[in-house]
Amino acid sequence: MGLELSTAEALFEDRPLKAALLELGNAVIALFWLGDEPRLGTLTISMPGGVSSPLLGDRDRVLSQVIAERLAHLYGKMALVSINLPPDLGVSAGRVLLKLVGELVRER
Image (cartoon, rainbow, N blue to C red):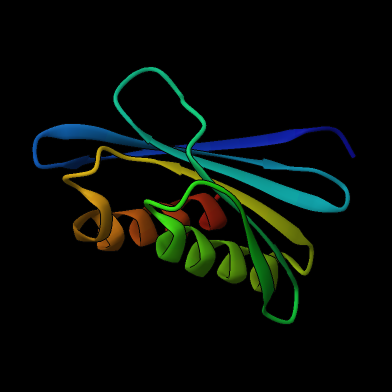
């Protein structure tokens, strides 16, 4: 199995909210960011079965944990999720982020 990269994009408050998912043999790595330049943000790791742990950052911790646990469950692999959003967006972007997750997963 080679590397499989999926991407998705949605507008949130007239700004591009972007996502990328990289599937590895034993894990998935998902990145979510606002704007054109990908940036590492709040980082969470999750294992199938709902065990998760924040690794870096706190601002988008809950969203990162929810998405990491969902991806770990869907793929049956560990999931590493990074969310980098401005402080003023946070939870309000949650619905759009979950929509992007759905688009990324549909591509598999």
